[in-house]
Length: 375
Image (cartoon, rainbow, N blue to C red; front, side, top):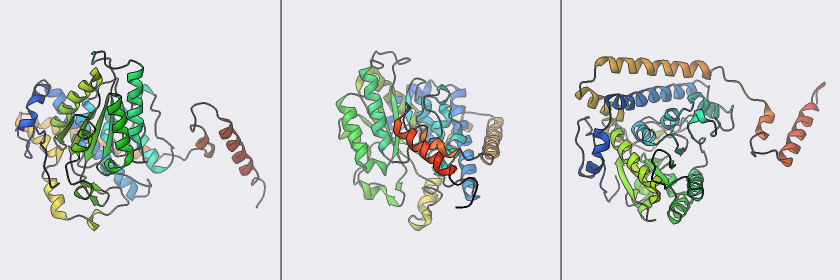
């Protein structure tokens, strides 16, 4: 925990009981308006993506992927915020937003292509089926600049601020506590605040920047970083999907109405390793992991639904759906093939570029020189 505490928006207690914090009061009408079907969908989203995440981790261990960044434990923050975004909004993920991308329509196999090295981007962000979702960013923090610039463009083009929440556009950008210490993030906040850009900075504080604990990075809660630039900021229990949804929906609607950028610090925990190349036992203690396991976002939401009288069939059907999704991921992942080598030149620029044409021709000529004999 950081030395200085900050108010936290929480709707569900750790045991899943309905126990809103004082800071949650203004958001409760949005939660009260949720239907049983919507609440159950939140749960399904979290369970299915965890099964996919577990399967992807297994695939990496079995040599099918070069790398995998697990999202276990962060499902509530991602599902709540993604469900809060409207269809016309554009989302900029980092590289762990597996739930976000799935909800927006991205095929999870497209993420595996990046981690397997058979794709240079994964998916086409301009394809409508991908829900205005940009590709994963492995250069941490840079996506916040992309998002701020895109949001500024929305303002310049008059595509936001009319007061019509069903048509005005906004942007969500995801990043972590480690990336929040990078200059890119702070520069993005400066520009977003200066130009009243309709962007929600969604910080998932999972407590560890690989092996660096959050208290080493900041002596105050990270929610204060956005506030320091004049950006209204809210600290949310990131393991409470209802809190994540309600706060994200509220701040996004405010932002797209022309009131400028907003920021959220979702306090969560990375239950797994940073990536499959990391060993968290080298830098954190099992008692910490056990404490956070008691705040598991999926167990919390299940307990809440059970308390509302949800039938056992809901959980059985969800488990079956998750197992099917994981098996489908595996069956398609193992059939992925490597792309043709010249593909590396095809999407560097949106329009044909003479340098790319020259380099592609050189590579073709070079490869052809090896044909017909040993060299």
